[in-house]
Length: 117
Length: 413
Image (cartoon, rainbow over all chains, first blue to last red; front, side, top):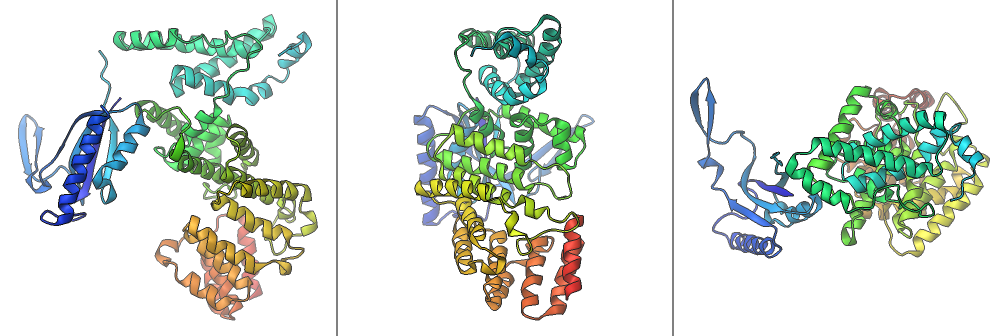
């Protein structure tokens, strides 16, 4: 089963860019990515630019409405994701717990919908 | 199993009892085979109804259990054939055809007991705890949706929807049907135990007046757990705790109008047989050298059981145990109980200090907090403050017996 592991965190939480802790965090992410690749469960995963760079599009009555900012203004924003192919939810949850941001943010785990046909 | 004709015949007269005895076992096995919680339950239900209708007319087959399983299994296969898309169907049917058909095993073959997997799935932490409880009562204990709804004080429709959503989540999110291994086992066992304990003490229901008690169901669950996964210290600890608690049930029911607290219970009504069973469980738990919150709570209950009278209680020991309990279960509930024990141990100043250290914002609507505080303030002769706290507790109480108990205390002041 495929699962999307969405990494949410408040941008002021956890190590900030330019600090030695941030370099450690990057290293932890590299190690985690290596681990899921070696385990053969990795399908994809990327970090996202900060939420200030987000734009949101809605089409209403045939017209595009574009707004500056994320879809929902919340303290914790989507900061990146992994797409993993796991045997079951327990395996997906145990990888989610290993994502470095899990220590100060939250990881939402969602199964990818199985489309018929 | 040699079932004589007479026994089979009489099976129809106690059909419901027979079904409820083994239903969880059948369901657990069906889910294991077809990997679909909702479908397994529906097909088992249909098979049971069909069995009763058919057997009334044609007699009971030689192996009724296998008949039920085979019928339910075949119904499920039919459903899967009809509803899966071609591509998924091929895979599913190949997998199913590789298995021995259910109910075809030789008669002397015991049906494998997969109830542990069922219990762990129902109590999976990816489900909300209230849902875990409802699902366990419904699927493992076999309580009807109506009965479960009643014990949660919600409508049947609301409960039915909640259960369907849970079963769909199990399937769609891929919650595994398995007993967790290694490190995982301990934490997952904890979530099973808290579900059993909440069912036991009705801790999930806000209205304690609710007439549905599930002592029997919780006992069935803990025994099943202990049978299938023996020598787990915390399982035995919870068993001991439940036995200690049950040993006092007669004395708790001394009055139909008010709560009978430990202080006023007639100790000659305590069931010494249950106490000795509780002690056996407790000793067995301790011998496993794996201390945990349920064992410590059982120990506290055990100290009460030893006391000839309320005045005789070893409060020193109980205070020590509450300090220890807090290490394993750091919660406000433990602090409140610890404060009450300190108060009984003639350490009212410390008791007040401890209860005042708790963040009141979180506990304003927590009845035991106000009761405990009133109790301590009374010992310190701060009667007006005590009455204020009792009034707060009174306003929060939803149980007639409890209200009467609180009113009696206000009157005393």
